[in-house]
Amino acid sequence: MSQSRTYRVRTYGCQMNVHDSERLSGLLEDAGYERAAEDATPDVVVFNTCAVRENADNRLYGNLGHLRPVKDAHPGMQIAVGGCLAQKDRGEIVRRAPWVDVVFGTHNIGSLPVLLERARVQREAQVEIQEALETFPSTLPTRRESAYAAWVSISVGCNNTCTFCIVPALRGKEKDRRPGDVLAEVRAVVAEGAVEVTLLGQNVNAYGSEFGDRQAFSKLLRACGEIEGLERVRFTSPHPRDFTDDVIAAMAETPNVMPQLHMPLQSGSSRLLRAMRRSYRQERFLGIVEKVRAAMPEAAITTDIIVGFPGETEEDFQETLKVVREARFAQAYTFQYSKRPGTPAATMDGQLPKEVVQERYQRLVDLQDAISWEENQALVGREVEVLVAEGEGRKDGERRRLSGRAADNRLVHFAVDEDAALRPGDMATVEVTYAAPHHLVADSGVRRSRRTRAGDAWAARNGRPPAEPAPSGVLLGMPGVGAPAPAPAPVGGCCES
Ligand code: SF4
Image (cartoon, rainbow, N blue to C red):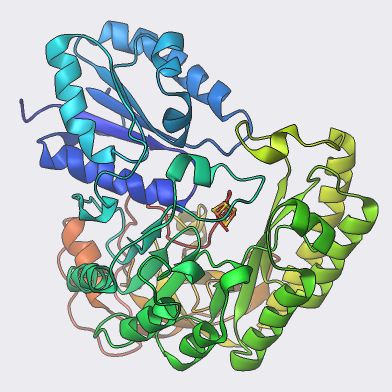
């Protein structure tokens, strides 16, 4: 294969897909492809699709339609479609868009380079979908997007049957990775420079059920606490049903596990939770929140909420508002229910009119925004340590700020000196001077800063010289920040847990 064939991966959906795309890039680079420049037309375009968003298929076919003339003008160009929508639509994709060269599913992403090659040689579309996982994806080559923060999968698939969710149908039953393999990958990414790791699974609290250890997840968190150089451990997503006290204790007692919890509520109404086939009830959810707050008073708790699930009454919705008031989430990712073909909820009675859903959604957002703002205002005057990120602050350049996440995962934009030498991956301690509902601002300068191995790794990746050692608190020339990379958190949960 020519060394000069280039590729671009376009990713839709959740963290699982973003991480799978890192593997798709790694596989293609292993096979000799190079990432295409932003302004160049790639030789291979891969769509890593999501099936959970409304109109996901219309968007995909729209995008494929736009690409057709581009392909016609670039002989040899190939288009591949993978991910959840490919797993769902299979051969339908090449029927509706016959200019697509390869369709592959969620269980066989490792086949992409071979399928591209086969499509080229045989001059016909290759559709290959597996019903079960071929290789645990983490064993595949990976091109990690961030030098300082990494995702590590602990499991794929889900054994639950939430009626709004397509994951069990498309990603299959839960498969757990052995703890030794997970920890080996965590050590490897830390050795490469990462200081933050997010453990990924559809239901991390069920981790270990496959190999018969119900406390496997808390043990994994504690084992991460032993890894030298790993400063921040996060995870997503837990499920309230399987959330056990040993996990709360492990979070509280392991210093590098961050004081942050993203735990999907979905609805505050126990009646509706039953209809969603989520086997916890309002009291259990609030009980976990209470225990987490008792063990980690500084923890920021975030959630996902669906408004307008079929059959939701005003009383059900009031129960959701009640939980929101009591739990005092730092943030809530709120979704208006929309039918996802292939899920049981899509055919349930009691689908609500759009206006009703919209009106409730607005009330929920207004309430949550007010709470988020109050919670953030309580932090004004406090010191927070921020892991400098790239791509988190669109206006950073013009405002002479950098951005990143505090330990509790709150987004912080902070002012830097003209000569600040902080790189993505470095740490800055700042005082919060202003709070908005969805971010904090620290405009009184950096109090202390710390260069990290992650900052060095970022500099090496971006062809920057390693920074000269600077006396503590003294900041040197601020480098330009490279192309945005997705941060591993927070979770914009589309469907997980
Ligand atoms: S919502 Fe989460 S727990 Fe429920 S089926 Fe989907 S992935 Fe599993």
